[in-house]
Structure formats: structure tokens, C-alpha cells
Amino acid sequence: LLLVMSVTIKDIAKMAEVSPATVSKALNGKPDVGEATRKHIQDIAKKYNFRPNSLGRGLKGGLTENIGVIFVRESRPLTMNFFYSHILEGIELELNKRNNNMVLHLLPSTPRPEPPKLLTGRWLDGVILVGVARRTIIDQIQQFGLPVVLVDPRMAATDCAQVLIDNAQGGFA
Picture 1 (cartoon, rainbow, N blue to C red):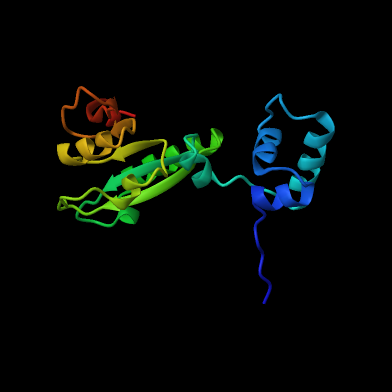
Picture 2 (picture 1 turned 30 degrees about the vertical axis):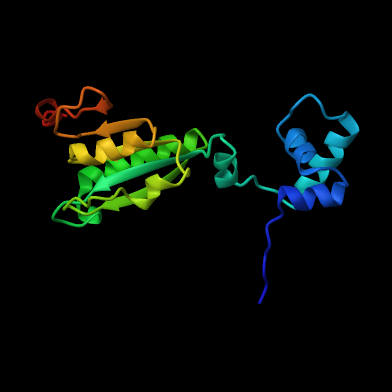
């Protein structure tokens, strides 16, 4: 059994004999780190294949690079809905191009009074809500201060960015 441990900023700091703050500054290109120290820290990070923790970055007030994609369930499984399957594939493709992660969450068709746990932590930089949405979920997303984009919402929501599908013209494509 081989266990692979990921190295943290604190681990790099111990190896480099500097503070975790210095490691963070060096890896983020901040100017107040000497060039020799920066190179030493970067060499250690490369040697141990260091990857920043996006959740940790989000907790520090930065961007997590995670975009929540919330899909409102319908009567048939998502895998059987070819329209929304293509939409989700397109979203994932575009997020990957921008170095963002897609965090998919499936909402039940009957609304719950509490918001999805996905929204309650600082795990996301924004939300794309796909499918037939209710005003309550939009309000829940907005109460956490997250930007929201609606895709094919089938409802009027003037306070959100929307991607609308032209079903009439789509029939001719």
C-alpha cells in the first residue's frame, strides 16, 4: 500500500527554513522576497509537486477557482437528458479553458427550505444554475454573495445574468 501525501505550504516553509507567509509570497510572485529565497522555495515546491489548495485560498479571501453548477432534476435522469448533458459538457469545457473546476450539484425537484451545503462554505466563486429554477434557490445563492448565471431558466429573473435558449430558431439548426 503506497500512501501519497501532498505537501503543504507549512511543509515547504520547514524545508526552506522560512515562514509560511514567505512561502506564500514567493509562490505568488510577491515582490518582497529575495530572489535566492524565491528560487529555493520554488525548487522545493517543484521537487515535491506542490499544488495550492483552492479551498484554503478561498478561506483566505481569495478565489477558489471552483464554479458550482447546480442542475435542477427533472423526471428523467440527467444522463438521459441529451440537451442538458450537452450544456453541462460545454460548461465544463469552458471552465477548464479558464483553469476553473466544475463542482456539480443535483437539486431535487421538490425544493428544500435549507440551502445546499455546497453554498454554505466558501468553496465557490460563483454559480451556474441550469434548468428550471425556482426563485427560492436563486435567493439562497444570492444571500451568500455569489454571482449567479441562469441557463435556460424558463422564468423571468431580471437581477441575474441569463443564457436563454431560442427553441424556435433551434429547431431549424
